Length: 593
Image (tube, rainbow, N blue to C red; front, side, top):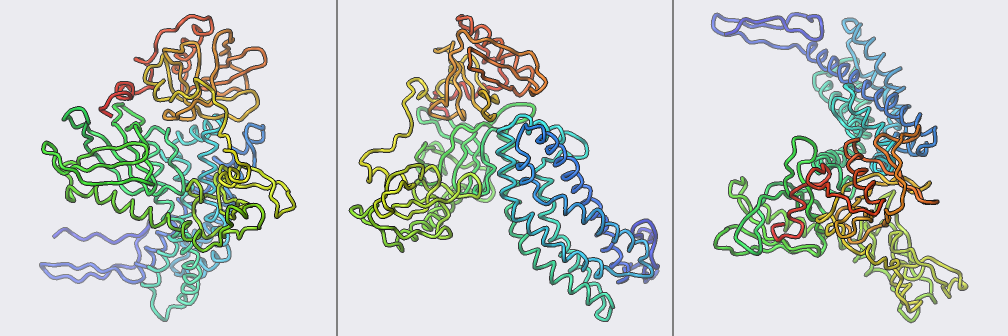
């Protein structure tokens, strides 16, 4: 038996522990006083770490972004709405709660109690309710402006690279206030278990616990969302921060390796799947020393998806996933534990749950007294309540508080998103005033289909088709004149070597715009307000600004563009282009995908 050492808590020993000894055995007991002191020490330790995080959020992230926003780079309100009332929370903990705890621990021998101090916390819990309520909105704004503004993104990345951040993202640090109240509840419950029934601190401690526990129920709901958000952020980084998946409506279900069977031969290829409540990401491994681990080959929606087991003599335990976007024949890996049919069951359960939730808007439709086609626009409809649906009743996209809000069609009363209500027509029941209606009602009332936009000829070519045979392609930040910055997928195809096409994403079926490069002037001399690795294309009154992810990538783009503007065909940069994955190019038009 090892020799016994004195039991220490913090930096000094407390009263000696009770030791019962014989020649063959020693039993060491902690007294109740020691256990209570240990809990109090843990509270102080975690409070100090928490205040450090709050300072990082308030005095570093928020302060730096506000400083830049005051220059007019991006709206100050964006920063305020992201960080909500973090300054008030930081002030309370930094100037009140932490000093009170440190003072109490210094006089613990004479005043061993926590309940009275934690009771001082309870009036300030309303601050946490405001922060938690705003959390989803803050995450959406953060993602939106990281994509939209290179300066916004650069400030965050610079701070995240510092040692104080501990290799964690801003989103991870912003989770701390959400998680803090439940931690107070946990420590206080443990404290009460060890506290004698007749202890003078029991009344204050119990009263504090009642109030903190009520506040924690709201935070616990947010924590469940935050755990999912953490996972979404991890996947977002694994995919090279190029897939827009960090959204409160996306719920992670399952991930893992799987084999994909080729249709034209008997080969099986290693693939990776990310299954969510509303979509499947079908990925290929990306062989790189750092950064992205996978490239998304296809995004398949759960709506309309079917899954069935198949029989293959060469490959047992196969099943087929059939969606609107693509059909895949897959084989579960034989070394899986649990059994081979686990992926198949996961798909079945996800599809079933999706259809159950999808009934929310269908049941709402059954309850409403629908306006007949003959009466459409002539009689006021009954509006379906916002809370009766969770998704647009036309396109079925889920609603959220920022980018897809609820609107009512003034003709049929359905709850739809802004895209599906972007139509106006005169309604007879409203004295022929112009009202917003859904696209279906617009077609019925006007007798014409709502145009989705002009045909733009070559812009209809899919990004993936161009990217597979391009001189150069990759993501750039783009800004035209005084319009906001946005992240675009840029392609100069081999067949159209003098034209730069701008897509919203690598799999888009139509380009957002194109720039005929012939005759444009290329400028890459740095200007004071320009972010790093930027360059500009100008011709007459047309000015396009671009920002590459690195100086090296900028020079590759300039090498191609400087040749193209002269009317000569530039050499391909694809073999050495870090923005393009060799696997992508080889597999885009092949059945091996």
